[in-house]
Length: 91
Image 1: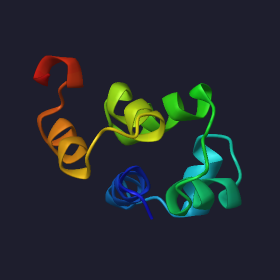
Image 2: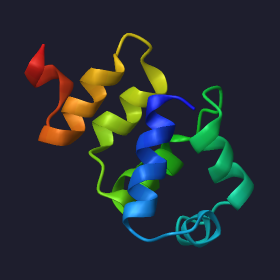
Image 3: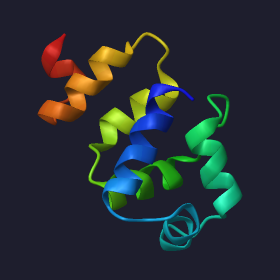
């Protein structure tokens, strides 16, 4: 599991959602959500990324970067989420 998958899973559980329940909320399949959380090769659409971000209160730039930019370290993503800031503000 990669860091963005861990973040999504942790926030999903924090909000009290099962995989099936959350998948239903964001209008996707439980299997697909499982792959997003567990498989670092799964790249969801921007629409799905936006739903994940809004539903789990994770800043959209953090979720997008977690999926698309390889140069972001796990520690950096954790700090971005902790302080709810955009990476450009840090660089």
